[in-house]
Image (cartoon, rainbow, N blue to C red):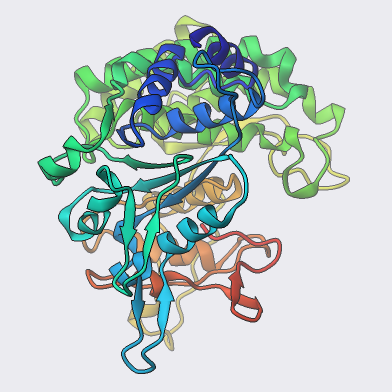
Length: 452
C-alpha cells in the first residue's frame, strides 16, 4: 500500500506529502468512518491516489473506487444554512448545505466514495447535531423530523488546527491523524514549486535552485535567531511569500493573461535576472516582517550573500536593500514593439510623479506618497497580478485602508473590479457574497473575473 501511494504521489508531483503518512491515513480510513486530521494536502493526495487506482484490488480484496470530496466551513454559516431550517413566515422547509450534499450522495446509484470535510473548529455549537452521525447509528436527524441514513461509502472528516474546543464525546467517536510540521520539512515545499515551473524555464532550474539554497534556508535561520518580528510568522508562510514573489517574475514565461511568453531577446535577460529576482523576493518575504533594527542586520546579511557568491546586479551600496525596487528590463511588463533595457535597481520614489496640491482641495483628500506607501502599493500589485491572496496586517491608523484603496482604484489592469466591504464582528457570510446573478437563482463571479 505504501509503495503504490508513494509512486502515485511522485508521478503527480505531490512531493509535499510523505508517503508513510498517506499510508497510515488509509489504514485508519479502513476502520473509522469519522476522522480528525491536521493537514489539508493529506486527504487530497489520498483522494487522487485512490481514484487513479480505480478497479485495482486493495489488500482486503475489495476494488478501489473513485473518491469525491466536499469541503464545508461550518463556522462561516448559520446552523440553518448548514443543516436546514423552517421559514417562520411560510412554514416551508429549506435544506442546508450539508443535508443537500448528503441527500445527493444517498440518491446516487454508484459505489463511489464520498468524503465530507468540515474545515473549521469542532465546537459544541454545530457538532451536537452530528452525534448520531458519528456513533453507531450513522443517521443525520434533521429538525424537520427527517432521518437520513449514512451509507458505508460516506465518510465524515474534520480538519482542525487543534482540539481545544472539541468535546471528549466527539473525539472518542473519531479516528485521529496528527501530522507533525517538522516531519514535512521545508525542502518539500521548494521542490514542489520547482517542479511546477513552466517547461520553458527548465534550463534555469539549477540556477533557481542554487539561489534558493543560498537565500532561503540560511535566511530563515537568521530570521529566527537574530531578528525581531513585528508580526509573528511561520517558516512555511515565509517560503510561500518568497515563492509568490518569484512566481510574479517568472509568470510571463507561462503566458500570463493570455499573452505569449516573452520573445527570445527578452529571455536572454533571464540568466542575469535570476539573482536580483531571488534577492528581491528574499528581502520582501523573510525580511519584510522585521523591525528597523532587525532590518539593518538583514541588510548586511543579504549584501554579504551577494558578495560571497558574486551575484550579478547586487543592490547599490547606498542605503538599505529595502530602499530599492527592480526594473527587470521590461521582462515582467513587456510592451509590444519595445526592446529590453539593461536591468537596474532604483529607489521606490524615483518614478513617483510630483503631487499637485491646489487651494480648493480638502485636507482629507490630500495624499502624499511616502516610501512605505509606494512600496506597499507596489507589492500588493505584484501579488494581485500573480493571483495571490493578500492579508494586510497593522495597527489602527497605520494606513492599511488608504494603501489598499489607492492601489485598487488606480493603475490596475481593467480585468480587476474593486468592491470594498467593511467587516465587523457581526458580519455574516451572506454579506460577503458579492456576485453577479447571471442565471436565475445561480450566482457566480463575472465571466473571466476572480474574487481575491
